[in-house]
Length: 329
Image (cartoon, rainbow, N blue to C red):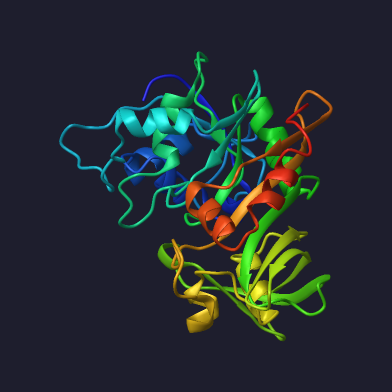
């Protein structure tokens, strides 16, 4: 690695140890090397010295100095496998680009960060998304692998810190679309429950618990329905718990279509395209722009979900809502 990088800690990385953060981002860096860089003050957090065991907060800036990897050492994790055609497809999904902000319509099945068994992820493609800048864009929030839609990145350290702070402080307003099995009663309301994170990084799972976990709050509204079989929901989370929307829709008794993890057999319907895909899409985002004003972004449904919307006769309504406003700062 050459040159100093200043990387913002994303919302989903809040609370992890500094050494674990380095393992996520720089798997080839040995623990001994990291400890030496910490002792000599080369690695810094928000400009100050730190320890490997320090817990990070969203929006903090980690200074990563240049380092080399010994040819005799083996990386902890295989480098991500990317192909030129995958990069070109990703570039075609850009929905906003300026000097500070890059936004893409993330396709389903693309992980944002690496993990066990993942050969390809967005974090491994960021060098190809510089669009003329010397700096690598920085992740400031995350979408689950199976969730599609608006994903924002900072194109410099200043923008990344501002954007990460907006997600941390809940000044970013997120709206998701979901198809659920059944129709919620009432058709509009709030879902409140405590959600406890269970499992490992390889398979995170949120579970509602009245006695444990952190409070999760989601507003929901039925936009349209197809009889009593399927409902199209607008979901606005006010907290960011693990798999919050999936847990909350299941708590309503109307699991998200294709979400067998939380809905079991009830989450699947036979006889239409992509029946087993998770039908959850980050449709829009309103967020303060790092230089002032409000950035409003929308993402069209991916082809797999659009096919299901057409199957249930919901496509016209989706097109009308997508054309309601333009992306602007």
